Length: 329
Image 1 (tube, one colour):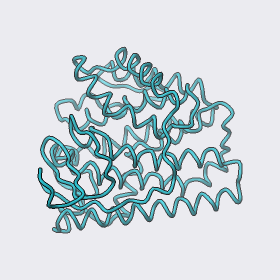
Image 2 (cartoon, helix red, strand yellow):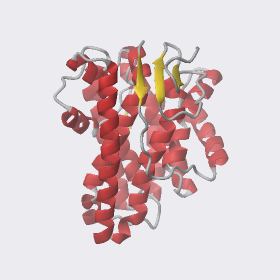
Image 3 (spheres, one colour):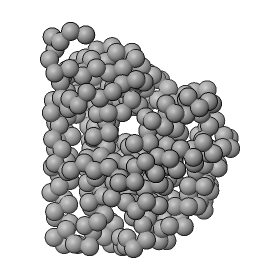
């Protein structure tokens, strides 16, 4: 399937994991069994193992109630993302039906989303609830826009990284979790302050998009999914995978540095934003760390060997990362 060299990616924001990880996992499992349809227990176990941990990194310092909502939203939206890639399951698409209602021909999916929405809105201020609802609407409608590309009709029309990243801000789903980062009672991000963080939020979106695109190349090549900046860049430029990876990794580093500079600028003017900006930073570092270790991208049975850079071999069943190109298989 191909290979490339993964350069070292700086991680300037410390990685944390939620201190109540075991309880979060147990309660997320119970909720997922009640609301999400996996077909059988083995499929459920494989899926939840590959996805649930993402929220435990990005919501490391959230209170338990909100972190649990983040974990359940993660499992639901990741499953929805996977369903939306399959043409035979197009009926699973969710259509926002305000206020706070979501409709799908797959009734169980709509019920799961509405349960999460009601519980999230109950914990949130009216402003945070409205931001969450708008983020969900944007995500679901964005998935509909991406459908032709996800089904392999053709690669994205390449007009440069900026155009691609602007499009993906609507569909990557990070605004949902940024809104959840404000849900905790006592977190008061005013409308003025929220608008002031827009640049920082876009930088977080871009960092997550680029990082996920580098690490999910194997998964998307296997599924014929062209909504991946690295794959689209290589296809349209007619270059090898390595050049596209190098471009994306350079941008990942640039976006993190820009976020840190923007965070410092905001804190000098609006110090009350520190808790929220810290949470945005943990989305960057937590997502990046999760990308190294997740079987969601690297194949069932994959176990991270601790290498953060090296020669990445893309096999149909798994990713292999080696410190030297000449190592024996």
